[in-house]
Length: 319
Image (tube, rainbow, N blue to C red; front, side, top):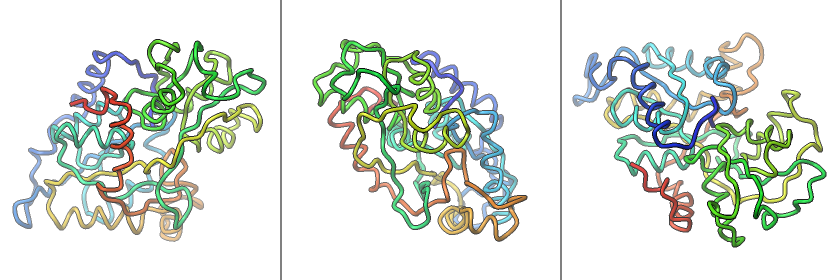
């Protein structure tokens, strides 16, 4: 998920986080509204934040049917806040400026590690009934002499973001397992987006790169930005737990229940289409091309924590 071009420097991530905080305005934590049950927050407005999978300009449009559904089911105004990177979303939810956050798997784990009090309720799925999950791909341009991840050594390699699960963490583990130092043995480039990583490889800006499977197999092809056969997949990860939607634990129980019901049972193309939330038949619930969402919990992300333990990546302990 991602995509105004993102830099790797921590200082830039901090600036981006500050930007989101300023953009959100008044802290959601101070907007108490009517605390109807047990003193939990019940604000008049809920802030929903996400990092785009592609072009940030289309992000709110992609989520608009779900935003409209949330407004109808909760009776609240939903303020959609796009973010430039995962660090911004983490800091915003930790400081009470975001009520509902769409994370990547690693960024969710980082959020919990940093003290964010939020619980995952659902994760995106591309097909009805499937388990939320996807793969990271190691890719090259068609015709490249690179045939496996072992050949990445000494090359210019595109990644997505230091806090991206499929665009950095799982690839780093794979490189280490192949005997490649991800810092010394390659020239890493952070592109800021899964789409940007794929397109940079296709244009020759990187010798090889990493991105989520759906960006390579479907999204860019459907958009006409890539043709079948342009990209070779030379490595595939194990299944990665899907990207979760996490809700602030401080919200009232009744409000959390309504939000949970939306994502687990109604935020899918079938329900949205049948109930008129799209002008024509809905094609997806987000910019990643998902059909809808399926229920998840914190334990579902144990695999990500295991890869963190393997790589000992500093991103896994960021706070």
